[in-house]
Length: 602
Ligand code: ATP
Ligand code: MG
Image (cartoon, rainbow, N blue to C red):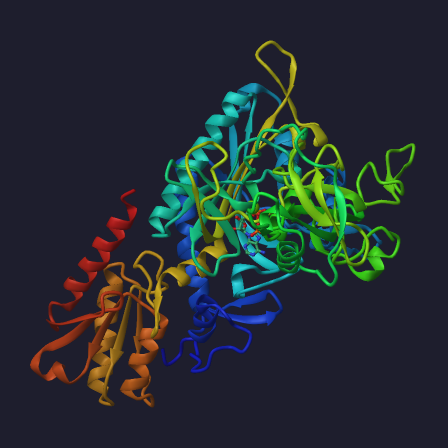
C-alpha cells in the first residue's frame, strides 16, 4: 500500500447518487475523466480482469472463440446495414484526414458478419461462435451512475452463425446457459426477462436483469413464471363491444378542468351518472402530445391517449414507437396543429377522421397528428375526453363510433396486479439493472452484408445469427451494489481485486516485516495479497481503508504477535478470530481456495 497507486477519499464525489458509484470512486477503483467516461485505476482494473476471466472461461466452455476487433471503424459496413443513420445521436462519428467517415463502434454485428464471410463458405464450417471483450462507445443521452451507463464501456459481445433455425436455437441455448453460469459464479442474482427485439428485428430476445432498486429498467413477473421487461409487456385488451345502449356523445362545459382529477370532480358535481355510480379517472381518456425523434432523423408529433387512471411510461412509449427519444411536445412543435388545445385535447383532435388530415401520395401524414391509443381503447368503449375547445369535454365518446385511431401504442404504465399477457396470473413489478442481453438476430445482418454459405445440396443459404452481450464494466458496478455496507465494499473472493489485505498495526520494523513475510508466503499459495505497510498512517485509518476497499479477508499483524497470534477478519461476515502466526498462511489460503472452489460449482 505504501507504493500502490491508490488514494481513498473520505468524501463522496459530488456527482454520485448511487452507492456503487460513490464507493468505487471513494475506494479508488475508478476516476471520472469526462461525463460518462472513466479511468480504470489499478484496483478497478484488477477486478475487471477477474470478472472478464469468469466470462472467458464460460465462453470457451461452449466453444466460443475470442477475437478482438478495433473500436475505430470505417462507416461502410454500418451504412450497408442502415445503422450508420439509424443509430442517430448515440453514435460517435468522426472523419479521418482524407475526409472518410469513421465511427467508434457501439456494437460489432457488422464486423463479425464480415469476418465470417471472409473466412467461411460452406455449411461444414458452421456452427460458429465468436466473442470479444472490448471497449464500446455510445453517446448516451443520459450517462448515469458511474460505469452503470457510460459513454465508453466494456462489453463482452458474442455472435453465433448457423445454417438454419434449429442451429440458431441451439447456439442461443448454449449462450443462455453460459450466461446463467457466469452470473451464478459472479454471485449476481438475475431474472431472465422477455425483452423487446427492437428495430433490429429477430425473434427471441431476453434480458438478464439484476434486481436492484436503483436500476433503470422496470420488469414484471407473475407467480406463474412469466418475467419481462416492462417495455416488452403487451396489454391484455378487452373484447370489442357494441354501442347500441350508449347515448350520443355530448359536449359539456368543464371550465378550468385541465387535469383528470379536476374533470372527475367537476363531472361528479355537475353531471352525475343516472345510475348513481360516480365518475372515476378510469372513465376518462388522458391525452398527451409528444414529439418522437427517430434514429434516421425523422421527427413526429403524436397524440397518445390512455385511460385516465394510468400514467404514461415514457420508456414503454419510446420502445413501442421504436423512437430514440420521446419528449413532451413543445409549443413550437404544436404550432402547426390548431386542433390541439392543451388541457382539453381528446381523440377527436387528431387521427385519420380529422378534417385537417392530409395524406400525401407517398403516404406521408400531415395536418393532424397521428392518434395512437392504448390497446384497452377497443371499439365500443366509452370515455370522457377533451373536446378540443377551451373549457369543454365530450361525454359518451365511443371508440369506433365517435373516433378512430391510427393505431395502438403500449404507453400506459404497468401496474402491480395487471394480468400477465400469457395468462399466468397477476404481475408484480420491480426494478433492475440490465447486465446481459441475448437475442436471435435472424438473417438481417447476413442478408445486408451478403453472408451466404453452400448447404449440403450445393445451394447457397443465408446464414442466421444471434447476438449476445454482457456489460462487463456495468457488471462491476452491479457487483458493488450487491456487495457493500455502510463501511464500504465487501467483495466475494472470486471477484475481489485481492483476496487478502494484511494490515500491519504499529510502527516497529518487525511488524511490517512479518506482514510482508506472511504476504509473500500467501502469494506462493496462489493468494492475491495487498499489504498495508504504510508507516505514517494510523491503525484507525488503515482499518477504515481495509473496510472501504472490501477485500474478503484481513489479517491484522499487531500487538498479538509477541504472543504468537494474528487476527483474521472476514469482511462480509464481520467476524474476527485469532490464529497462530505459524498457522495463518495455511488457514487463510485454505479459506480462499474453498471460496474459489465453491464459486466454480455451478
Ligand atoms: P440499455 O437498455 O441499458 O441502454 P442496451 O439494450 O442498449 O442497454 P445492448 O445493446 O443490449 O444494450 O448491450 C449489451 C449489454 O451492454 C447490455 O445488456 C448492458 O449490460 C451493456 N451496456 C449497454 N449500454 C451500456 C452503457 N452505456 N454503459 C455500460 N454498459 C452498457
Ligand atoms: Mg439490451
